[in-house]
Length: 356
Image 1 (cartoon, rainbow, N blue to C red):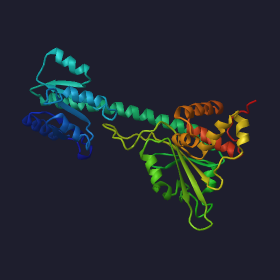
Image 2 (image 1 turned 45 degrees about the horizontal axis):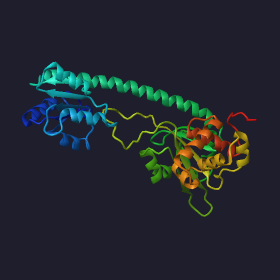
Image 3 (image 1 turned 120 degrees about the horizontal axis):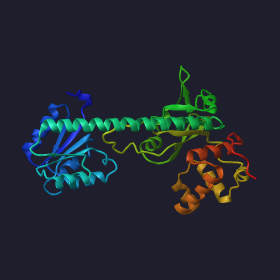
Image 4 (image 1 turned 90 degrees about the horizontal axis):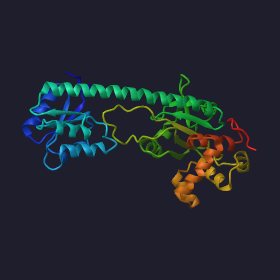
């Protein structure tokens, strides 16, 4: 028997009420959290509120068939990898091959042998667990590799820069960030008794920051105003280090992997604008339009906002961004912004060679 906290959800779809009840009872007795549906529409409604570890589904259902239901789920990114087990009264070889070719992970014949059913479910979930653990390890290795690269890059930037995880916990802070800690009562950074640096709670609570963490945008900027007439105000820019995965989307059959990392830049609002544009143009041989795009990037504008500001199409903007990546020898937006900011603040710290 599985512990209650470890119980995977098994969704059973069967149009015979007695068989559906027996299936759910056997699964619950074995320690699973079984949910039942008599047809495909009912099962689809259940998927709005549950994340099954595996689906057991009859082939012959009223209306949409089990094969139709499986094909629909295989076409949805959120559910495409959920193990799908077909039940049928048809035991001939052709029907079994049809089910397998349609994407079924297993195919059981009625009347149901519950020992075989439970053994098949246990084996399938164990296999999925091994795959997920391997994938998790690969993602973590990739994230660790990115962090190592960025510690070298960001530590050379004169502007305050940090690498944070999905909960905005600080994984790395550059020298400028540590210098900023405790510099004033309005500092956007905190430092604990153990010397661990952190972002001020007011940043994490900002609705735009929360929307960024829960969405799929590549970047966001917010202005944080200090208290008092003479207090400093800060611009906080967040950029994704790797491909975004929306945390608002369901992640079936898998534990969430901590593979989301963000670069956070902090700038005094009185100093945030890109200056020394002529030096930037000379250093990277940028056209006036490319300098304008660079300036908007460092101001934290999204690609769509830059298109609207410059009154150009997304295709044209993509062309200018490709040129910027090529001329600055960068590959990611966060890396490009870090380089532009270091140059713009008269701190040519990143080792980018002068161009003739």
